[in-house]
Length: 484
Image (cartoon, rainbow, N blue to C red):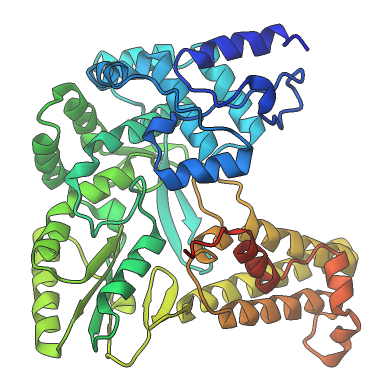
């Protein structure tokens, strides 16, 4: 079958920089707008770990042909000035392919982004930035923190500016060697699960105390002047890139409810480059504990450290307090805790004790709060609009199916993708399953009583309900065994 003109153009453009595995007709396409010509853009296999190569070939049916761009071509690409890369189509192609491979696009989103690149819609703004111009004024927004009634402030720029910032964040991985191995947030090839597994390996068979803390409103309270002094050293080889961040971090303006206001907003939570900047800000703290040989992990604003005795732990804690004063940061007192050697520690939403890893008490509490608030809101809507019980129940089920297993935000890991690869126990999942089932049934009567159980489990499944426990075991069965 001869490919259509659009597919031929896309194939030609992708083959200039993006490797293909096997012939195009060997690759499954899920894009209904394609004429049937089977194209799948693939991030350079040469940049992948062996495990990622195996995973990609297993999930897509692609074959690793071993035909990669030469090292010389990759070096020449890296020699292009950082901000000038924003104007190069090859850079955008690599960026899009990587995001697609990592599941950060659905096919519709990919097609939109692909058209944006194909038509070079990025070029006017990218050229201005490469020439030293700054971005516009960010918008300030207050959103609910997941699973709690608390609010947090996030920022965003215009859509094309946010896409440029995403590409910059992608390219900033060239500075990953600046960070100590105990810093886990927003690092390519490192995940929250790595922090948990490495901690458990380090403390296995030992009686260790732990100190956990959370930094209050970390991203938005970072001192821009201190951060810029650090960036000046890190980006000493790229003055234009430093100038870009200097403009970004010193423009203390934001649009709030349609009005331009003056405020300090740190690295602006919600913007694509904020995670990199937040890692830079505390990199010397991470390095201090790493060089001391302390079992320590930081994931953005969450920190935990271990010691064999109370006196040593207090020394680590006091040193951390001095660092926070030095960096003008504050501990969230509600999330500060010391764990005894026989106590399960909680970190990043997990509860760990020996080989047993489950969902933490705080995670369960947050999710239960989310379930009860959403159910009561639906009950009010049902009574106000005369909605049927079945429709209200189905709405609650669909909401939590998306929350657990899907995501409207391609930047965010789904709940199940965060927890399922790590946990070894299902008690927490059972508890949340039971709680959600109670509130689905609650929507039929508006009360918690035995009458609700007229709606049996089979009916819940018919409405689309998916048990966390069942989905967890399906996930485990789908993961290839590493034994042997």
